[in-house]
Length: 467
Image 1: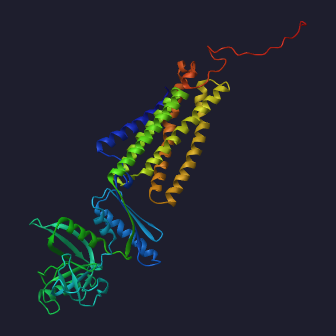
Image 2 (image 1 turned 30 degrees about the horizontal axis):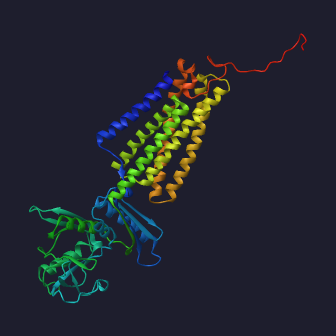
Image 3 (image 1 turned 135 degrees about the vertical axis):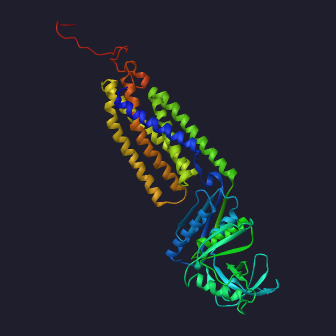
């Protein structure tokens, strides 16, 4: 094998082995999507007709940040027309997740005027005007008479769930500087701390979407830009509250149009079916290629294995670092890519066979044929990439996964064809033993090759007269 073939062959082998070694040492593996590991999918729609486009886009952005805060692997929040599609793979509590990302989170700070009996009629949250005195309940049904709103959620810049020194959960809230945040809050704090008639209980009512979620007592008359909300919070309650406060309110009120839950068992069945389909496809293709092309067929399967190794490493890395999930549609794209990769080999092999049929020796045919074959391979793969790119750009959801993995596998096919298939076939064509036995390469034996049977030729006798 000459250096011209050895260098690219060794290079791609080193890259492939290095990629696999890094993948296994880092513990990376493909991140499974909703349809392969289970989860929940929901379609949300605004409660008003013809919602503002800017408000809808802002809602999608806020919901994405809320989902990211939940720690869900590879969530998808996308707008489709006047609806928002949310897919949350692998969530343990779908109801909690959907409640958090979809609520409007209207937050208000109100002075507590007093407690009321549970049987007291509570004010409808929709009638909870900022300047009105209202009666609202907490989650346990206890009623609070609340004064006018002193501060809204727009005055909050950040919120985090923390543990205090006693091991109790609390929520640390950072307020906006100036008249939109800390100033009105301190004004309320001074009134409540001094038990003014506008806040005789000294308590601050924190109202979220018409429900009193906490009513702490002011311990100081003023604060810096940060305050702490304490109470009988569990870890989950503190984290949920901090998450909603941190990412603000949705500008559009949404309601659930459709919810679909995919069990982990159903997802595993889909994954197993995809793996079986891929294995069966590879085995059948391998049997056909080896039976028809002999040693060249083995080269084709080695090329396919190298493409798969590189693809596995890339997909695992993207899943670990970028949250890219492998869905059933993506598995379908990979299976289709098997045909793309094998087609590249077939184009090259058939060009070699055609040159040999025209009387050229095997050694020169394997080198000469690659240029024309690779030109065809590039054109075919570029056409596939254009289709995959359009699918990815114009669609959403699983179809984008199909397009992404098909496009990625097609790019790897070009790389492996040039850096692995070409030097391997050229090296086989230069072998003295194989040049004398082209049938081992799946190439028909020419009539004038050594050991071939003589061809039957017609002859015409000339001269000397005849009968």
